Length: 313
Image 1 (cartoon, rainbow, N blue to C red):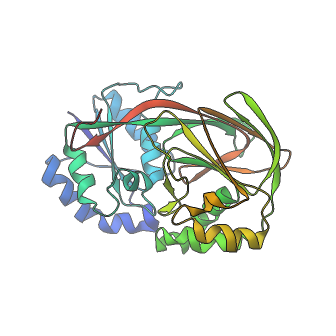
Image 2 (cartoon, rainbow, N blue to C red):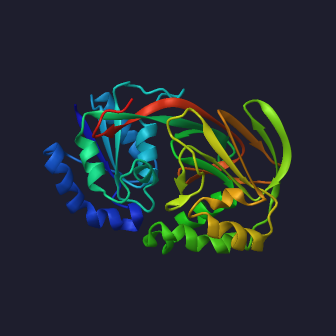
């Protein structure tokens, strides 16, 4: 299978570039010699992946964080979210800040598993998340992801962390360090919610997560029970909680997932969601700020595949 290796040397605030010689050596042990393609700017991985796909590549090794993996994936999809080449396979290599897809696949604690999967013949199907919102320029935005979308305070935490010169150097803990500053300056906003076409009314939200995986935010168990291959998305709403209540009552429980038992937290599942608010609220997808409300999200079951050492159903 023809392979394309796409590398973001700027991931983890340049840490990926420093580690690149060691990463390349591990990949060459398994893939043999290759010519890497290096990203130069946001969105470049999408163009590199699309060009490589048109050139016959079917295995796409994305070296970087979840942003790089997400961009690479979007280069493999047509406007409707279908794979342009049904036999293409995505192989993430953890070199970013959080590396949540690798964590969800069980590669977080042992990166060698990601290298092995990049060269293996097995495949594992992953549900695809389709997001439509309004971009910073006011134009419609449509993006595809695989982890989770966030709105409200969680999206602001992600944006502030990404913009910080020092925070992302700290790895996954950066999100935890940025969270208190955001929480203490944030307040709930009224949001109208629709799930699977059924209106659930307008209610105050401090933040909400629409998750395809349990983990996010640097390894936090944000959506306990979420599975990336069940054809459903998990909605976690943190409602009209006070700032101190969020900081002291919810945030400490994110690591083990016990926050879902908090009286101001509500969970549900569905295949499609819509969020509308009169107050501007940011939208984040897979760790990247992509726009603002109104927001529509739906799931495309088993929309793409990742490399796996053992074939999966």
